[in-house]
Image (tube, rainbow over all chains, first blue to last red; front, side, top):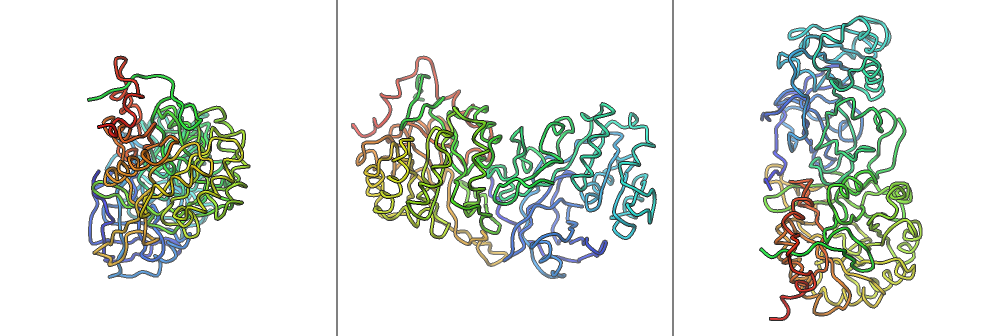
Length: 254
Length: 296
């Protein structure tokens, strides 16, 4: 076994991306593949899985205890990092990326890897759109907002209707699970679920593939180790979009 | 290397597909995960420990991977009674439900939910890092006997998993035997700690945890050896087993079967890997191996 105790990192900067999302820049880099995640130890609070948005940043949406505690951190404060873990997105030559909300975080490094032809970016409203400028620099970005404040008015899935999906060899998706389920329904209808990949979010304790808290039904596959990126055809008849489990292991309907 | 003949295995009243079980707390939170491990070659599986009330477990970090072991403090997270729905699809498969409680009545209540739905019970009297449960009970021979009796009275095979964090494990094993245990499982994790020198605090959210993996294998072998000399019921060896030779060594110490946990970290197909090394058509009968290190 490899010794992989948490690596202490110092926060160099905290960047406000939107009212609910911040990027934390570390003094250390972690070589990774886009889609991989790290276990972030917020001392005294908890340890949570978080996708890397570059090799020395995580981009975090305020949600629970640990992320709320992180929002009180500033330059000079320290965190512990384990990882990177998980599989990441499969590389393609002509990738369509679909991002909802903070789901743009793991897709930014994929876009920067110069293989994303088009990226569909969605959020509730213009001010909640993540990484618009950074993504614009490296790919063709199409925008949708729920309230129509920028781009198409409606869900990001509606942008798919105007695209020739056959022109892409891979489709990479990350966002809220109901949005991803809507994408899955659309790619299934078009018979291309097998070339579509989804990055899943599940409660995790160990992040190392042994505790079982993130296993999905019915395959029993581990999101932390066999995922977090799964092929659409594997998710078709699964818990994806229907329920997930909480810290105790009880099912919670979405 | 010594190998053994494949054949039917029954240990402590439970029919297994082979001598290798998935240890409690490893990939045992859902029915589909347990089923996956059975399909990957486990001869039996032990579930995550289930208690009288749902628990979220400790705040993280819950796990630290070390050079030769794993340090963890999950804090007995479990869905409690809702777990019945997870094991019902696995009825008739070699699934041991691990249970914990704070007293004999709680053990009996949890066991009652799973009667007729599990091949047997494994009592967690040994978790080293959950206050009021596990080792808090498992170090007291009177409580071990009473909790064991409360569950063995159901008539369902009852295995008792022991903590090594005691001065004399044989007294605890004998208490389980008096309580009607059909087998002893030895050992649970060894109480331990690591500190992050960079962050100047223990690496686990719970500060203390339990050590498993190769680092504890010699402790497990010693405990199995001692228990074999002091108890009559079968022993299931658990603690750092990661190869077929480790399985043989546990058997020579006195184990009738083994449980495997931490070795899953580096190889989720560890059961197939060990089976292909362990079983040979011209191998020895397990009977010739079990406890043979006591005869010299």
